[in-house]
Amino acid sequence: MSVTTTELAIAVQSATVSSRRTSPLEQEVVDLFDRLRVRLLRYVYGFGLPVQDAEEVVQEVFLSLFQHLQRGKSRENLPGWVFRVAHNLALKRRTAISNASNLAGLGFAQDADVCADPTPNPEDQSASNQTQRRLLAVFRALPEQDRRCLALRAEGLRYREIGQVLGVSLGAVSISLSRSVARLAEVARR
Amino acid sequence: MEFNEAHGSDAHISDEDLLMAIDGELEDEESAAVEEHLLACWACRARRQEIDQAIAVYTRVRQRNLDSKIPAAAGPRALLKARLALVAESRPVPPPAWRLGSLLRGGLPPLWLQVAAVAVIAALATVIAGRWSGMHRGIPGLAALSVPNASLTPGATILASRNQVCSGSNPNNRPVPASLQRKVFEEYGIPGAKSVAYEVDYLITPALGGADDIHNLWPQSYSETAWNARVKDALEDRLHDLVCDGRLDLATAQRDISANWIAAYKKYFQTDIPLEPANP
Image (cartoon, rainbow over all chains, first blue to last red; front, side, top):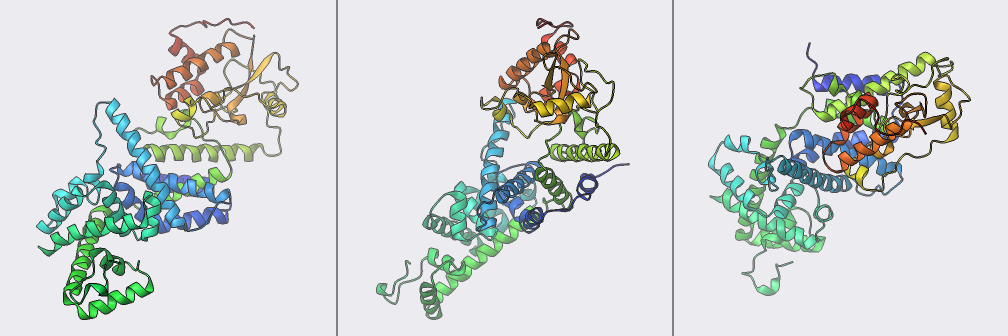
């Protein structure tokens, strides 16, 4: 009989957690996880991380959030905080994978996100029309920071939050986004 | 804002301001000015539509391609809850030797295995604790051995990376508090044992990410057998060097020393007898 990872995880969680009451703080973090997981995963995929690693990064983010709140630190704009931590952890993870791959002679590309965000190669191959393919080509040609800005905006972050995640000014975010959208608009207009 | 009436009636709104207006990032006054201009300017309205269309296409392509990669939430959610419970209770993470990865072959990614094993160990600990509740935790007559009793001392680790272990800030074996030493002696059925005769030792040394936890401690004889505490200290130093030199991964070191430290000594020193002086 095969057991899926999900079933195993649920069984394990039930065995260990059901015997104790979930604290309000734990519940708050789980609620935020429910709200933000998909958006975070989409953003983290953009760093070229495998699905498994992206999911681990997201788990680490919410464990860090729990410890952050446990220590009584700021609750201001928690979604922005979560994206900022995810950004930093994803960068670290990508560097670690890259170093490991280089050591193993596998040659992990530092700019793997060029292929992974917004669409990975397999999906790219099945792009259904020319507009999509042109759009992908334009997107991949954007500087990394422009791609990050666009991805964060697509996930609903305000300019100020994007600036905080990427460590750039509000003006830089605005210029980056308008530059990227202008290029995408050229594709959409054709 | 780039747009300014001073430029005359032919002035248009910049892409940057149009986008900021669409995104709700302009101040009220600026936003009102943009809206007023758009009412009168077909070119800017057309440009806004182009920008809107570009955003729509990008968003559609992005979601279509990325959402299909996202696994169902139930499993990761359950894992997070389990991990939060462990963090909340500050439970140490069991060592790799106790992870399900050694029991299940393939198919499961490392995170699932790690957390699943943590949770299973925690569940087992709960069962054992429940069975023994109200009873003395120790096993009368169980003497300290060269290797620990696996049910009492399975080993436990903290979540530590190789960098942390090798940073130099990671502690070597810390002195075990006397109260905890007494508990360990009681657990092994030798209450009142002298600390000069036994080292209450970490199965997985903190220098390799071992936890300050009773499940990672046992009374190791200094002189009872050839395989004593001083020999194990030599193994710990060897493993630490190998890990920090990049010749051995941390998880393997933790697994080997917790599974059977004597076998690990033979493996890493390429010998069947202790090389270090066996007597104090």
